Length: 261
Image 1 (tube, one colour):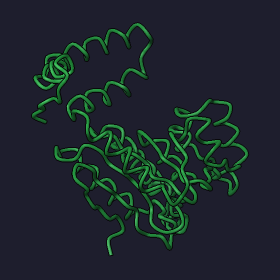
Image 2 (cartoon, helix red, strand yellow):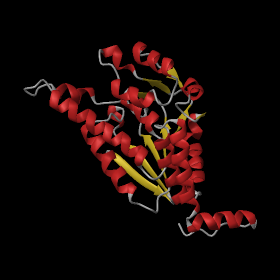
Image 3 (tube, one colour):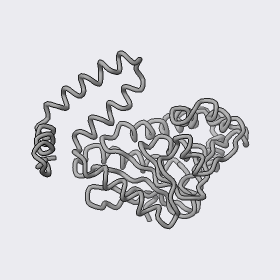
Image 4 (cartoon, one colour):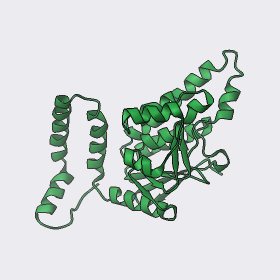
């Protein structure tokens, strides 16, 4: 049984973390599987959207604490292992945002610590009613410093700091209010609603979405004037695409576009 299952529906890739007995923890093996699949998807032009979910009763409970404890047995007390672990996890998270395709987190149960980081990292998120989110490492003496990076780029800073320092969980509805997730739906409709969103994304011109996703994250790091200068150049390049010309002509002529991609 694969710890990460992939099933494709047309132009949508479904990735399901499949270690429910460990609450789909981001073990060494899970990180490796996710990284490998993301690397494959990067060059897959047949896929236009990705859905990431978890098997069992939870989306993802963060890092594998038993595995981390075992890492302490090294002569250096685990320092090299822990440094490598968090570097590998950061690489995987950044790979999600550098992927050409939009990635949607389909979240249920709980998303805690690095699992909450994973939700915050995905481009979009749909959560089931009753889902709880937390960066609760502080409760066991481990401040969620790496999850903080993604979380603090999703929700207001004071609220992020409160979650990080109290270890309290927030419900799905609050997560939606703060911008951590896009929408909250009944659990029975979670898969359907996530697929519907993925299908909507996949129906767009793949080249345009790729350009836009890259530009979205790049401009967030820039001052306002630089962001406008950068995105103006991006739009000029986008306008030169054959399929963009076709899309505009089709809109003017009130017909469906005949895209090549």
